[in-house]
Amino acid sequence: MSIFNLFSSKKQSFFTNEEEERMVEAIRSAELQTSGEIRLFVESKCSFINPVDRAIELFGELNMHQTQDRNAVIVYIALKDRQLAVFGDEGIHQRLGQSFWNNEVEKIIAKFNQNEISNGICNMIKTIGLALTEHFPYSKDDKNELSDGIVFGK
Image (cartoon, rainbow, N blue to C red; front, side, top):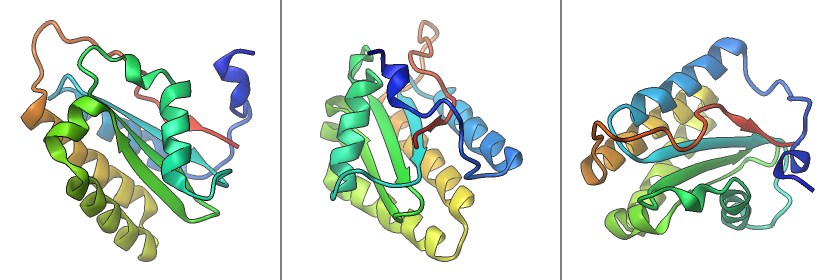
């Protein structure tokens, strides 16, 4: 079974086209400043009790651990279950520490509670991008190792 069969081929409408474009553009803009990689995975419901466990599972399924500098980050969101997690590979996690991730989750939860979900996601991506830039600056020979598009689950 290929990885693509694990995800719904029919995308649910979680966001407007404009919101999706803004989120993808936030990823692209962030990655122009860093060798790091950011993926956004959105689904309706979390099949795990702990969303961090789901983020870790997806991180592996999306082969995010295979970036050259081990500096990929997944932002995982289960909208209907109101769950989210941010998981960074070992290279970036060692440099930023757990408090960085906890802070980012608190900020995005505040935006979600204000019903500003897409704005919260864009803000989080921008902040993660800045952190990646500090520790993994962009160089001329960097290549985009992972797709910038949003991955939609079920």
